Length: 394
Image 1 (spheres, rainbow, N blue to C red):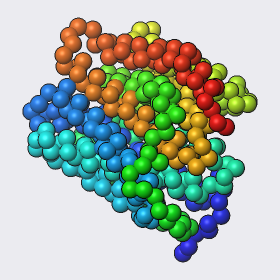
Image 2 (cartoon, rainbow, N blue to C red):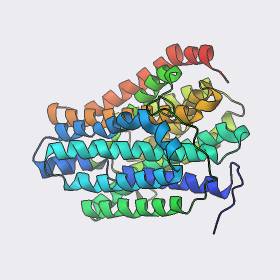
Image 3 (cartoon, rainbow, N blue to C red):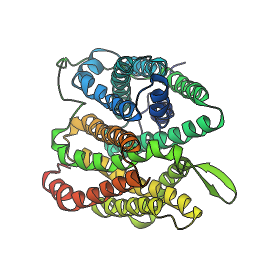
Image 4 (tube, one colour):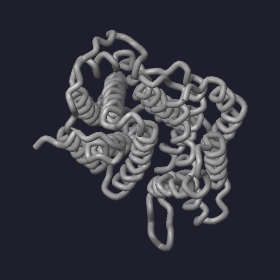
């Protein structure tokens, strides 16, 4: 039965695409914390090499990026989204079956291409299904589903890996992904006539005016990327009131609760204050991981990390949107996502390298993460925000 095509921030179609996007990120990130070490053992190679290969998950997004606009104009966006989502799941399974590093590299590129196309089509559909006067709020809410899906995916993947093993985590990822595909297939999208977009263009790919915030965003997501391979081997779980909870589940809870802090402390648009507060909280969180006073401090660090990211990252997305023209909202969203994924993949690679090549203190990757957070704060105060004030359009 055809669904209503009523547009709005809380319409059933918009909520459906948000949930589908959430499940896409959960499915993708369930295997990311453990896949580098598992594949290193399977291929008989170093963790540093497999960690570096996973940079190609993001490289694939850049490879297909110039063709985003043409594909989403020439073909039905919903079907592009569903097919690329399915291809991403197949590539994920393929990565676990690879027998050589060359196969793993190529599958990572395919995975990145499919994931990039799936997320870009999701972003475009979300914008299409929202009224123009609510699109800024819609963009931020949609971005929330991506970050929350990432954190819940990491937590679920680590939990299943600890409880039942690697293959259970694979089955869990496929089950979540299958549910997401089914949900998106049921989505009703009104017909849009093609407008004749060029085959290769930066539209829906890169917002060049957002280059400075993009670098800043990479520094922030790098902090999280460094932690992803570390947590399964260090602070993979925390204990709160006798209950064992995956570290990143607490991060996700803190991220979700940051909405309350925004409502209490930032009643009007306050991009600068909110981002600075968020980054200071992130710095405090990483510091708590390096110098934990007590075991309870680890759960506090996880919650603070989620709150800090929840305060800072949505405002960065809003910055990208305000730097864009009216017709470039999709481009702004994709640029924000590319920055996030670039930082994540670089962080994973750096941790895998230092885990193998640096002896001595196991806190070295945490110190690198802390340095990146401090640099992100300084970069925002002295470079990004002055640039944003000068270049913003909205």
